[in-house]
Length: 103
Image (cartoon, rainbow, N blue to C red; front, side, top):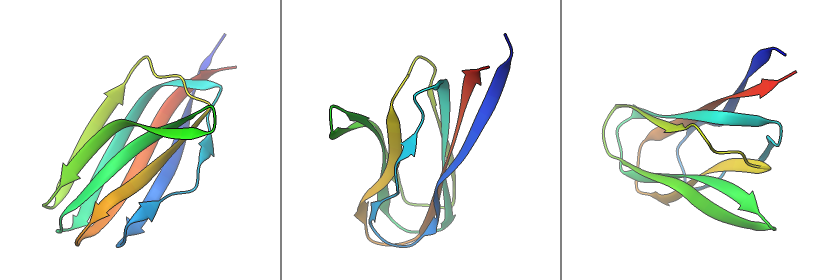
């Protein structure tokens, strides 16, 4: 059995509120999320998982300056995930996710 890496760009330089598309990740686990603020501004970025047709926040990150935050979720195993800018007053933000899966 080998382990492979899944890389996702959930949000790419967004400058508005709202959710990304969703990503089917049922075969992956051991997630690392990076929230990257490329232009300073205040926002709340939520990492969400879909369970039984509803979206639940698994981590919420407030950002207000240039830089990156790393969020680790080693035991998370989800059917679908997405990023959501739930509160936005400014800035440009991206979210990247990396998970592993067996093949």
